[in-house]
Image (cartoon, rainbow, N blue to C red; front, side):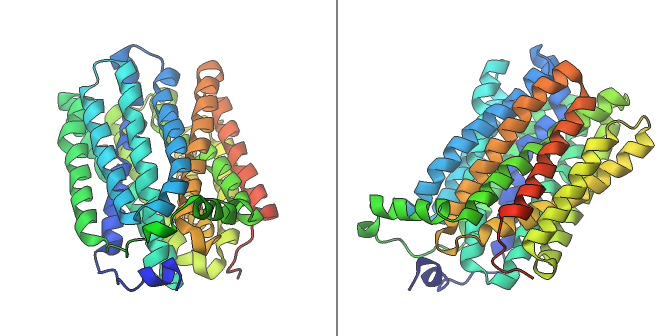
Length: 398
């Protein structure tokens, strides 16, 4: 009996998917923090916006390294335990950011969110593949990713209110930290514990076999490359609020409301994507969504009117949400016998893509502005779609 089959002896309860969704919600808190208050962080510590955005690059690099380690650790350790460890590290990172006296300290503690996130989300997707049947996985992924975007729906208006009265540090202490603790507790009690892995069988050959099953699979490797490219484009979300605040002189309170609209759009996109993935096909939906989202991003930054830019940005965001679910589902099904390893590498690839996008994007933004940043990030997304079309195989092709 395979590990996957034996683990299904433990049947997940009704709170299984909600607990994963809340974990996903919690791990997005600091991403919201940067997206909404990037300008305020820069002003607090006396650095440029491009420099301030490098905390996300540091987080992406750290999570990429840990994601690579997780590809091995997921073979050795229980997936639930790794998810709980990741959720705990996120909590520590939030507390550290709250206490950070300087930008240098922020650069130390902010990456802990990336480390914890890659651990928690890689294992969340692996647990979905482990405990749920095929016909329920895409919807579970859709709800999990939708919950991540709901962080912005709730956090943006509440964050703007809290920050407006007490400063951005108070948001970390009174909102983000409690949510992270609640998510950790709920995951502990709601996620079933899979049978322990026999320790005698865990040796170097097992690690190598798990990694080889991924890297010798051309389609799986292509999926990882697509993930790098896609997330290089996806980081537009980090800059979008600053874009509206600087390009159209939108005040913080209104920017928070705009972020709510984007959140609703990407949430709906993720939920719709979860329902359409099995009907249209993982690969087909991922390619179509990435092309549309990226083409719009490459063009709407040139438009002079807010009332032209905002609707197109919303459409782009909707397809970005659908593409994220389809792409994750496609990665999840590539190597069924090594889902923990595959999803850890997928998250590491996403972190690498984010690091590339932020690193290059921050430089381009400081040097050339948003008129160059939009087409650059759009090009990454279009490259992802083309690479997916040419080299990725959908094991459940429609």
